[in-house]
Length: 273
Picture (cartoon, rainbow, N blue to C red):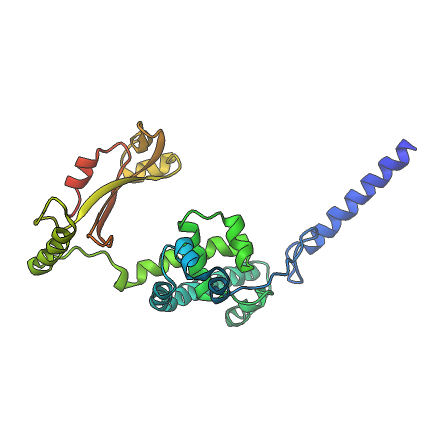
């Protein structure tokens, strides 16, 4: 009896391994054992209609009108970055097929990459909403099911938005060099100051941006030892970030070029500002 069970188990394992080996590298679907999840996409409008304007502002740290304006600025760049990533993925697939001896036109991969989105494309507004909820402290395990997307798509949406922000000149942090503009900012501070400060243009503060312990290669690139990135007060590795904001909370300048062991005074004195 024991030998029969052993023979059955070995046979089943061999059949599974053989079928998995047969499907590896084919273009007919996923590997054996994986399952395509059927998801229902949700729009940002449906979320807003469901939770209302007050909870929307609390959840996304901005009003729905501000969200629409931010989406208008970022949408062309999100589409451009996504297109570049898809073309790069198509180029890599074409290169793999070429190495295997299969001849396929690269343009064919570029025109058919949408076939890999069985649940439908993800709207740019959804990608922006996913990134904002993640930056606000939301868990990716809650954010992805909310909009009917997978966790890999949620993570890729976050970095799509980050790259889009980098490419949007309207969102650049520029400290005003014009004295007239600086005096206007000082007047706004004076109106809100109970002490009557009239020469304050911006409020500066620092924050520790947590990172993983840098590797030896990263330490060589940064020209300092990994221990320099360790903050003894908070017992974490990170970067010393210095930022300046006006009286309405709008960022005017930001510097993140020193490791966590650097004092706030030295980090600020060594910044461009």
